[in-house]
Length: 431
Image 1 (tube, rainbow, N blue to C red):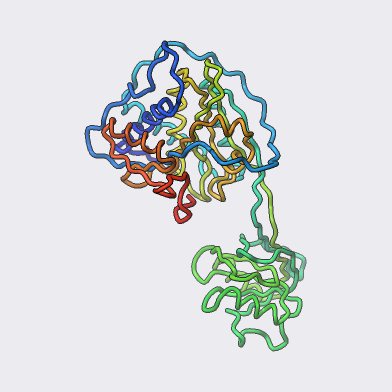
Image 2: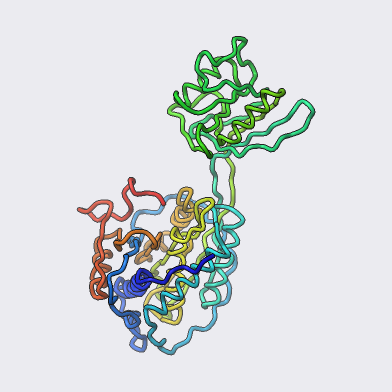
């Protein structure tokens, strides 16, 4: 893999990383102990040239009443943290910080990508990230949870008993769950004239996508007696569809290439098929790392990012950029003693429904909610030319002030510009 370019964009990205640490101190209502150095605004300088500005999210700490009766997932035992140095660290130039971020990003994309949600690859990445944070002296733990998603499967069998390779399939959203077995019958695009005169009693209908809705196709073959349906794409690749209304038989989607191969097999010989649609639960996990204050305070600032990727993606931007920035921040604040605790959370299974962050929030105790000052989330820093902060008006206002002091034009937006409620508008969710 070619080395990632080191541009002014990377320097600006790290300027915001340093500004984040400044926000940690700014959002605390407690005085810092006298011997402690100021938040690391000391380590940055304003950029000297125009640069592309990445996107980040700044969110207020949870204020809503926690959901009742969640069952907390057990956390794995924490590792004993290394002693924290007391010496004030020397300033670090933005270019050096940028090099650190890109070094981490290069490692993630080369060695730990893709990191698809709730897979063995995601687990391997979680173990690596936990090790990185443990080496920095953080108390680390793993918070495990289950991810339940619709699942589909097609199994084939020839009259000889041989089983051809099963095609990759996905459920069509809103399909009824169930298992259906029968001879596979090709019915083109499932117009009325495509249905055999003898009907489709007990059969699995193989249908090409196009011209009419999924609902019309599946209803027509079901009315003719079919017990299941396989719809293949009318263009290259797999597709993800949805029924407007739930059909009476299970239906799955496959790629154009797999559909044409099944069509050819059906024309040569009888081919049995089993179609199944149901839910499947897979494990995922959050990586949690704590740096506790010597003041004994329970107040906590959370710095987080999701570490999973979409399928078949290196995830350099979404969200290798966010993870690399958070790890760099974690390293440069690891020897600081703030008047509050810092908790780093790397969330799993974000790409398929925010499972990791939802699980964490749903299992927070009331004391944890009350003691959370703020949560700063880093997602997809490698996109766009404008740095934006979204969330609580007071917090985004403070971020804007710090950005201005660093020579950065920081914009803000929130779900409700009048009340400043935290969160992304539904139209912008999710990555």
